[in-house]
Image 1 (tube, rainbow, N blue to C red):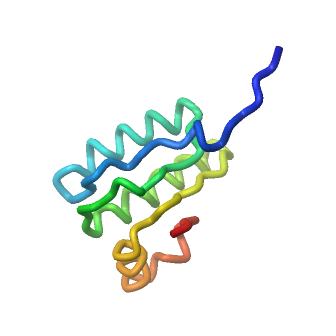
Image 2: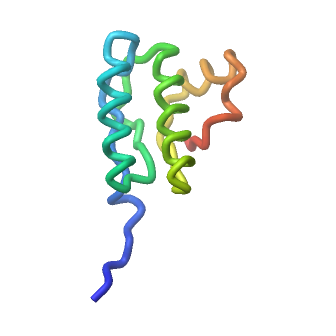
Image 3: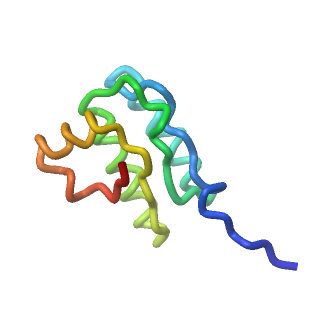
Length: 97
């Protein structure tokens, strides 16, 4: 019997904070989830962030690409999307607001 894959069920949550102080731990946790088959991250809980959040999101996306797995970033906060645009990395993110 085969299971039907549910893309929503294979997303993990970003957490409420993703700043320089928490970036290493968040990166490692996300990479573990991606290695286990996650294909996206839900950023809805993300309330406090800095440019480190962009680096982590891009690293997660690249890790998924290396596994040939599509990776979706959903509910990206508008402020983080604006920061990505200001840094010129918005085109690197496959994000939905």
